[in-house]
Image (cartoon, rainbow, N blue to C red; front, side, top):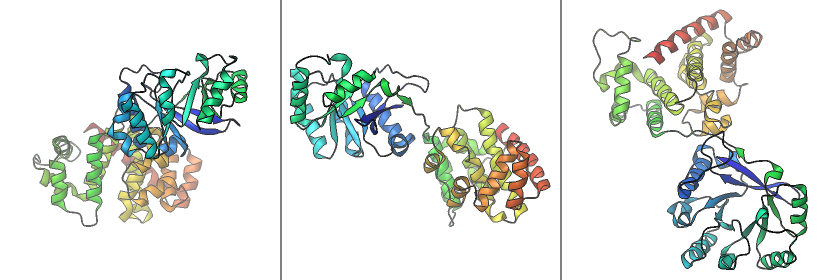
Length: 401
């Protein structure tokens, strides 16, 4: 998706328009199904990227075609959304009633591309903002100041859109426009992110189930069996060359019992990571998995073996910001994990944060930093090398399974 700033007369950001984009390299969009485009923008802004990341709590203008005004989704939107009624929406009774209801529930309504058409005047009664496309009007027309004052007397806020030159901004400001939007301040900025696919949510549910203090083998078994793909993946994993059992394991219950809680939890977390970030560079996934295993293998060496699983999670998801395309805090907010792992990722000066930072430096071949951080974290340099080699071997065998 993309966002374009909406500025005040002092050229401070007063809000953003959130825009649909087909992909991250496009600064335009061909919209075949307007309702779907609106739904995508709302879903990504609320669940994939997050409004705090996109707009920092400022008003968020979103295009609404006619059918979206009546959709149940509007009943659950935060009030910071400004419902932008598209220019092709007629001023019929149903639309008037829908806009009036939205305003009663605390939303602001904006009219897009208003050009002083008499047939849209009825919508002025249920609007808060009027967006005027400067490319569709004559800024020097004698009647324009009076037309704009008439809108202001109704209590409407005027927004000049498609402002492309300093002269247009100055003229619009002089005419009484309060808000401004356009290429004069830059093209819409592409904002990308990834959301958890349904299969990854199942894996994370399993991770959480396995992490409970009152771990129940039967509950974990039922969760795995409820997803045929998950069951098949588990049996494929336990029968891989990594384990070399004497005979094939063909029971989910037996597989979970033989792997144990910690190994199952690591496996489910890696499945979640690989599934969520399908399509990314295999090298990125390999780096994340190896980092997690590296951190885990260092736990006994520094006397915190009981936290090996937490260190594994910290390493595994330390690249979540790169993978999801959002700041690390926002990325971790959508990933179920314990507070110990989260703190290690977010606070590099914490005890486990230093371990993670040392491992990261080792992977980057930043030896001076690694030696310094390893000393602070209590890691013997030789033990680090042994753990790294073992982590790479384990990762190669795991991802080949």
